[in-house]
Length: 423
Ligand SMILES: Nc1ncnc2c1ncn2[C@@H]1O[C@H](COP(=O)(O)OP(=O)(O)OP(=O)(O)O)[C@@H](O)[C@H]1O
Ligand SMILES: [Mg+2]
Image (cartoon, rainbow, N blue to C red; front, side, top):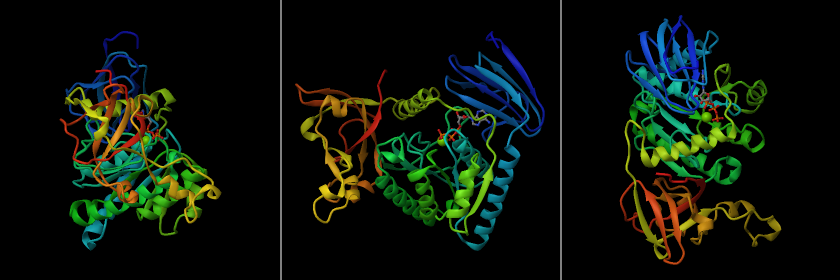
């Protein structure tokens, strides 16, 4: 497509229109029939705006006419989609939820695994949306610290999903649980990652016990694309920690066979087809997506904007810590300490431009650093970003979603994630 004139696409049943947006916004409108995007129904005659970086599939079970205005980078209709498989999977989960409700037990816990860019997050979104459309309230657990659907990158989190994800803005995240990890890949500190997984699993269990609807609705777990060595072991560990009932393995037969061999025999492992539409994202896109999520946290979306605050905090009132000191060999550790202990240590960070500028700091709900595990296992209030470090005046400038002051005695945890505030 070379002009920005509107173009109509006639889709027959079980087909999807795939398109990618590179530079300018593409507007999508459902003209007739029924269609959905990753499990969320499109409203007829509504103009949906897709911005740069969007990779979209508009699927229809019954046939529809869709109009695109703008210049998508790629646009084509595909008849080959795994949507029938996904809807059957969703129906099987729904049957398990009904059974759980009858027997007053917890609903099914399903974990989606697979290598990078195979459609894991998209499958989670489809299954969550279908569950909500059936009147359920599932819990969504995100173990992907690289992208993070529940919070920003560098965290592990969970949230109750009460309504289908918005076509343009994604999930509405009300009161998520988030733990600070600080890295974009589990191998940034695998010891810490494992501790946080365990901790998150306990919070999820508690949520299931207290919220009846979530209890029967069950849990959908998203994972990151690191499926080798420690990444693989983390999957096995997650299956145990979260008492996973079903693992769907996208795309990789080898991973499927390894999991069938290694997980408890009570866990059902399903090989799941990958959609041909899933787009491989180069590193640049991943960084942009991460950045967009932080911008979303502070500034909201085009539809519902947020207005963050900027204020100064003197060095003397800052308590910034990093979790994990550099790994030392056992022979260099004090007697009785193991190398893993070093990886969960709280290390005080002195404020300099090099250590803090443009870094995200997680605002912990913990107020004392005496017990490092307590800090690690504390939920977060939210995040701030260091936008300036003034050594002469001994102050930092913070971008924050709330007005000053920071919560009293709060501990700030340094993240590897950086954000350049260009507003
Ligand atoms: N059927 C489809 N048609 C077109 N684009 C799609 C389709 N399914 C997914 N995508 C797009 O492909 C990209 C990658 O998908 P997704 O994020 O689900 O993969 P992932 O396995 O979670 O990746 P990661 O390993 O980075 O977490 C996303 O931008 C998504 O919008
Ligand atoms: Mg993903």
